[in-house]
Image (cartoon, rainbow, N blue to C red; front, side, top):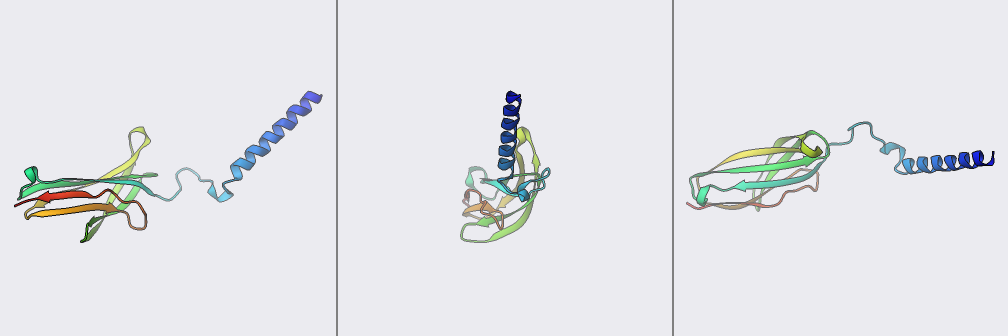
Length: 138
């Protein structure tokens, strides 16, 4: 009988401990499914300048956005020391290895000399891409 009471008491202590750990985050922190807010996690930017960096020529800008769950993220394109354009919608989807990612591509017609850098941002967040150069001579 003593072994049964000891086992019962140990089980009760374990249950109380697990309940305390589960509630440590707070009742409001429990989520059902994927109901949390859509949040971008990383952004990368790549720009391909015109061939041989001459113009007129064609370039290509691609931004890759990762997020915590599938959805639409609006990005803005920022020219260093200059204009901001957008928003441009990026639809993120669950892909290989559980990575949730989407991309935005823009073809560039370069008709004049350019030596500039661009980055992508998501308004209202601290998530920004690297600066990427676009260069062409005429």
